Image (cartoon, rainbow, N blue to C red; front, side):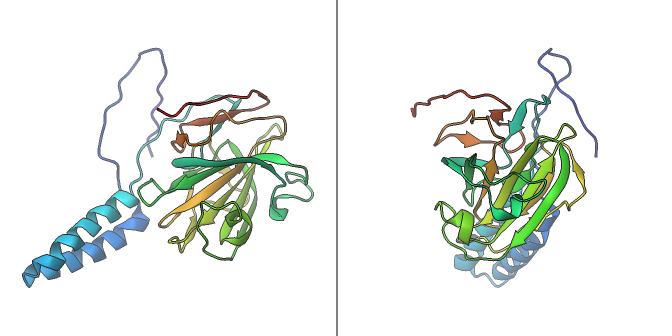
Length: 244
């Protein structure tokens, strides 16, 4: 895979292109397109047009656009596209505690809710080694609820940098989501902003910020996976936003 570097020095150029469709979604698009073609063949227009719309939606849902990730060791970037719907101090999940984990003291958790219209490819907030990965089966409550972090089907990750900094994050299934997929495993080294998995059809991702770090985002703000800086490590600064 070719890697392109951009800077604010004005060198080079960036061009817009149609985002590719992730391989996981191609089979669904093919099935939907085949059904659409069958309906059209039999001139069942009342069924063919809705199915054509569904095919387009499937392609859009599994889109995997290129992202430009800021390269700065002090940045923690968003792991998901979506809406910041919860920011609160919580004790990390037990799966991320223990020896070498995040500990059992409260950390700031930033929750990003993904609707069925958002990109669902998730990315790692920092560079490092995947030290923890745990899949927990559970319910499929509305991912917009706080208790979804503890009761829904979910997958935990903890990435540790070479300097010992650790960031935990969790993929959480929602009402419609029925499968959480991982592209990495324990022991893998991941670059900041690298694709680590996806959740099919609406869900949420929680990020547990390191101790002494507060978010750079506010409730109601939208994030872009791999691009939006949600926190600067060691920064304790309260920020406010205005909806307009």
